[in-house]
Image (cartoon, rainbow over all chains, first blue to last red; front, side, top):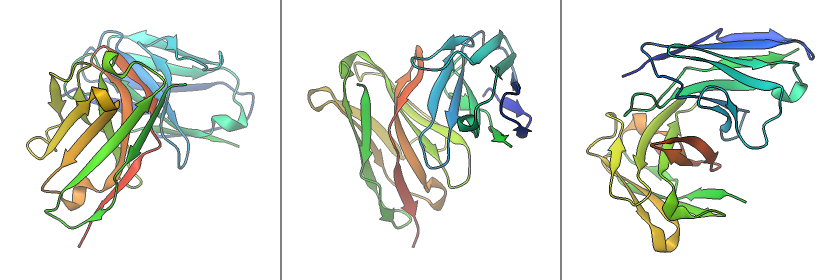
Length: 108
Length: 118
């Protein structure tokens, strides 16, 4: 089973700042890595699929990069509504599909 | 608009059974794999099961294998999760999601709460 490790666990930044979230896989998942955003009381929402492709309706300030075992989600200029937990998920070697433990992003 | 809507969550005793449903609309249901993902209270996301577009291939997480069964009725545009021999650790919000196999989970329902407790 592929283990995804996200860092940092918590990130606290101000509006307008740049956020960089990391996801590391225990073995290569090629580019089959997705990112999800989950706000309190809501379902997850797909942000990025296949490492770098924005999902429908996702603002351009969200971008993804990486391949193999190291991946990054970047939010270029934070908005207050970006406060959420962000999860990475792999489908490079499944079953099972696995998720990272999440990074909580707080906007000051 | 793509929509998936879960129902069937409830309070059930340990060892009991429950069936969740997920009604899909706004897309060609028979063309997409579908999945169940759960989230225990205050915890992260855990994939539970996936079924292929045609329904002929299914996979399960080890934690539910032999106890849960995923199925779909294409005539009703509905996905199901039959859960038997429920345990306290199955307590979670269960999400229905479009995707699996070759695509990410690109549309999610609002979730259905399953509580296993005596």
